[in-house]
Length: 613
Figure 1 (cartoon, rainbow, N blue to C red):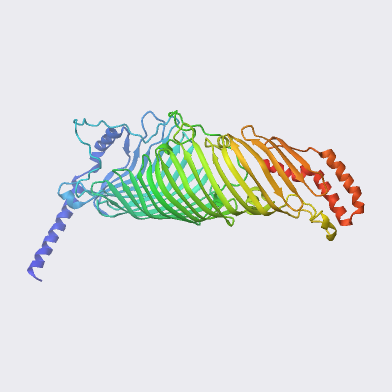
Figure 2: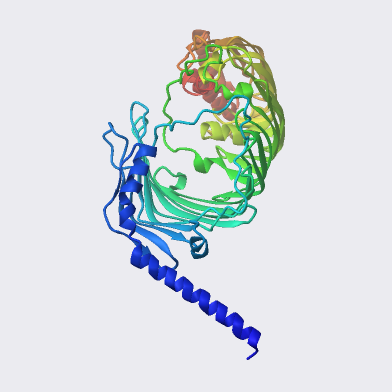
């Protein structure tokens, strides 16, 4: 064996022997229990809490030299009836041996077993985790404060290993109670400029509503040497939720992204964002430049989203209107003050979105918000074989928010829309709609009571299914062998009109409907503020006099009257007598038509009543 190698081995052996002697000396001559009182006094002086160490403190050698304490309890704040804020069955601090030989304490890892945290917020707003502020030493005048946290060169923050922990969140001011159990948090030693792995897993539970959420996350965290930046690479989050409050009783979430935090400027930036919620896939990027305003931009793309999955089932319950928070009298009613300061720009696209059984495709929208003005312009989509184009805005600069809406719909098939609204496809056809509306307020009641603007609508080449009449009562009636079967949709050429709105009062003077068996015209008004309607419809049917229908009264329960009911009855009776001289099929058709008109409030009338509701 070469002499040089022998010398190296001898030196290594000597060092190992020295380390062994030092470790033995530590165990023989150092008793950690001698420092109990000093540690508890230090904690009490800095936090105002009582730290109790019930078990013995001892040194350990495996997996490295460390200090172990068992049965640790940290009390809640004095003067509050609350459980201890923290308990731990075992606490271990691992230290590096070589720095210890040099007289320095370099903690390499903290291990905590069966940690229990109980966080309580009381009805008066106080919390058991708030510590009294420490007395800061006076700062000399004209002293520039550092804008970022400056870390000493070569500093290594200890790794953390928390096992089998639980955290309880009890907010007694709002009634929210959450419990996190089976919590595991593990991180490598954090050396500035180098990536450190971070892993987290837990099970979250809420009794009301009954929900269980399993969470698992991991990332590589890199902290800048000056503490101003923190980057999370390869961040992955997986969560699964179950419970009665979850749509479909079950939901899953998968998230991956690159996250960058600029701690000096309050900036949050995400790249390569990929989020999957159940079957919905979202990808893109988000950049929040200023969290206080907030200000930022985004670009998101959705593959497919089914909103019906997340809509509550059963009857809808009316919620009370929330009042605007006090403090800023000039803030718009019910409007978050942040909308006045936010500065946001971004784009959102979606291949398909389903809502109320309807499908919106090729959705594109641009969002701009600055100085209290929020705009969605333009908004485009394909809808029911037609095209939608519009814009929406909200002016929050004044004392009352002013929403606006402009919409152009062309070539839309109205059958699926009517079916989604009423549950029955009582109308079909190709529709077009142009409207420009403006109002004030944010709640539906406020918006409807002050809506102003105009709208034009037209439905062509369609059918109506809410009443039945013979196919033809004109000159060619003798060529027909049978009337139109009951409940058979009636074809029509067009239904069109326009609406003028002024501060919640809607007026229409040009409603027109035309088919081969019925022509009708209507005009009137509806007062959304008073919730009342006054509308007249004049219908013209073959072989019958003109029929005038008056719809008036409360908007939800209007009364429908046939103003020429007596004359119409006499005409129908006369028509029934004359039917003897007509072909048998025309007689049956005329008699059936007369009976249908006499039952107007229960057939056509019922539909008109539902329309105004």
